[in-house]
Length: 60
Image (cartoon, rainbow, N blue to C red; front, top):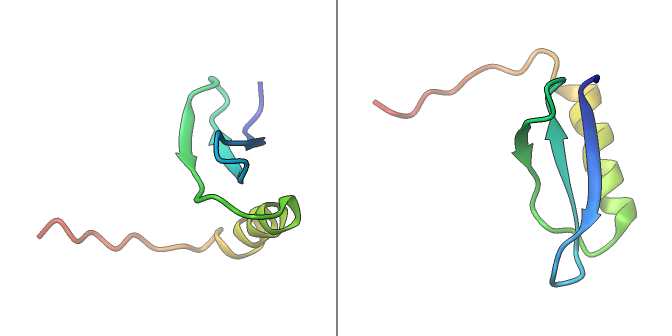
């Protein structure tokens, strides 16, 4: 199984997505979006802009 984004509707009718690891475990989840297009756009933004993301450890 490969890494994947899952798009779904929550109980409030908003679109959300999860990012799953190759072992099937959910690694992170999104906020709710009013439209599916907005959720898909957020996924594309992550795919395009996140490869060089840094870690901001605010735990002190």
